[in-house]
Image 1: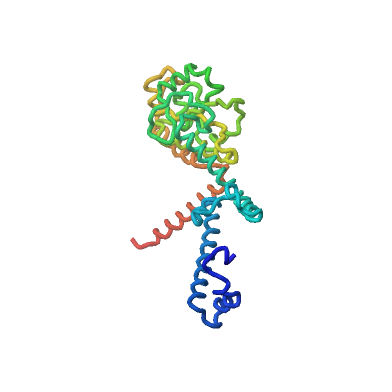
Image 2: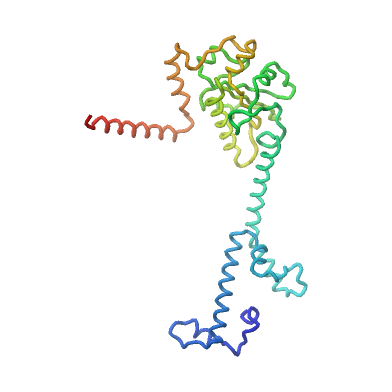
Length: 320
């Protein structure tokens, strides 16, 4: 190996015994030529260690090998290579196979993400969006106008859907005071999460449209929650989803009611901050923040309340 790596170093210049003397502390000192040879060997060993780290870091044996030995040809192109050398090179490629597999998997995921970002596809990339969208307040969510919602309620897109669910995330007293025809009232995370366990049509063209009073907080929050849960359930099949096509009604119920009262049942609008429902507001606000499927959240909430109680007790004891 030494002769193969250093053509300028001969056996006359440095013997095995000399090398042992130079590398063993307390043995005799080396000559200038021997020290030079030892330095070259050390640099080669350092280069080999760098090669090993490069293979692990880059995930490509060829790239790392080329970066260190640009003049070296591969086993496929080197017709003068011996069978032993060719076997060693093939073994190097075999050892890096798991790295290539990881790279391939990573590339597949990245390609899927890029396709979803660049193309106008639903969230699993299976098809184009059906409804025309508009720039909304929430740039990460797909928004539709009240006019498009009116067309959906009127059945103008019925031939394109297997089903559509309008999810009204307002509190029950708001919903009962007036809602879009055909809408369902789901204002807790448990209610929204239950959608993922209901049977859907085989072609998965089940469209969801979320909204609240203004579609500024509760509707978007539930939209994101459902998508997060859907992703979690299908994380081993990315980018597969149960509900890939989801929308947010821009402006919420208020904007829709102002333009299409005839499509609301009953023909009225009760705001969240209605003076007759202050007690209901407090009750449903607390209920909407709870989620029975997340025990850790309850434990965290109890710890928070406990810390808050201790802090209040501490401040009460302070002199005024």
